[in-house]
View 1: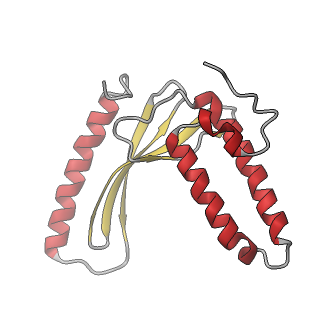
View 2: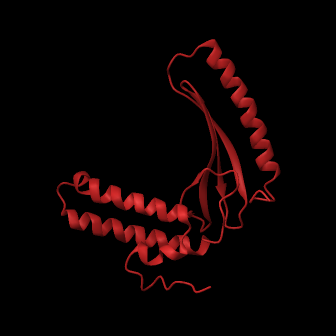
Length: 164
């Protein structure tokens, strides 16, 4: 496989052939939003400069993604963030799994994926300050039980991160 020379790339689009489809889609969406709303967000700045600066950031983010393009999304992932470098020089990305909602109550599963493909999954239970009915509470309790079972399954199968 030919690898890109990211040093000569002028735009993230020059690297698109080496990026996973979900990353390309994310960059395309970001690019559209910047062109539409970037100048409005920074009215005191030259619109062309706002877009140029944002494109430079996306180019660097694209360069950062290439070393991890071979790492597939986990089978349980619905969406994934970009690979990011933490303070200790460890690269990870956030992945979002199942989300269940009833009224103002929700429970979601997400994880942190490492370059070796492994994922440490966790659950977040969330509620808004809205009132809930007893039926919604019962349904939420059932969703929490299902989410706990799913979390156990995902973390038990962490050694086979791609669902195979």
